[in-house]
Image 1: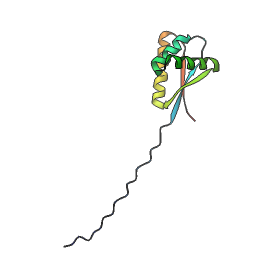
Image 2: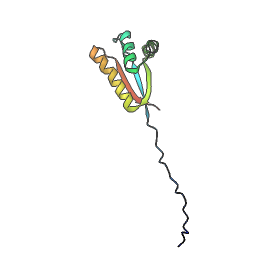
Image 3: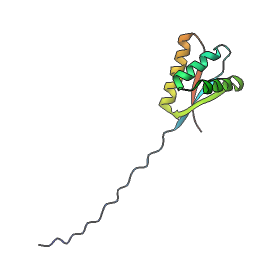
Image 4: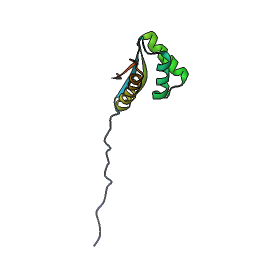
Length: 102
C-alpha cells in the first residue's frame, strides 16, 4: 500500500497582545512637608539619586506638581501608596497620585 497523502504545514497565528496602559505617578506640592523628607522618600521608594530627587522636589515646588515615573498601573499605585504611607507615618501630608498616560 502506498501513502499518497501530502501534508502541508499549518499556519500558526499568534494572538496579538495589547501593551498594558501606562500610568503616571505625580508628586503634588504642599507647604508643610520638609524638602529633605521628600528627597528621602524619593530615594527610598523610587530609588532616585540625591540630585534627581532634589530636581523632582524642586520642580513640584515651583510648578505645583511633577511626574516622577511612568509605568504599569499596579506598580504606579503600589509606589504611590508606599510613598504616601511613609509620609503619613512621619506625620506629613505629602501626596502622590496616579493617572493614565494619554
